[in-house]
Length: 99
Image (cartoon, one colour):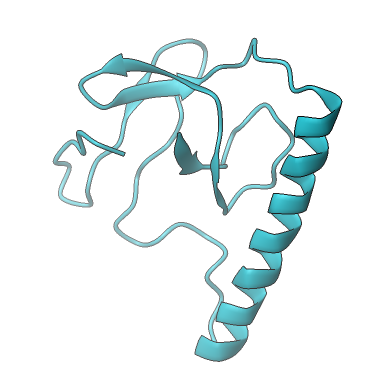
């Protein structure tokens, strides 16, 4: 599922949105599937994707003249910590049911 990379166990730098193996617990709750092991080829493909995303982000920063590496001001979507799932919310605190 495509989620924010912050706090992922797969070595992807924060500030990106990538597809990761996640566990969906329902009602918009999810956590990284930390027990999932990437095969060598999948790890290589992930590295290539990360490089491409970072290059695209740099182009956007250059075009807009601003730093877009952090989360947007209204975003609080984050993975769970320690096994408990976290629900994404809008800046008004309303749960986001589909991520």
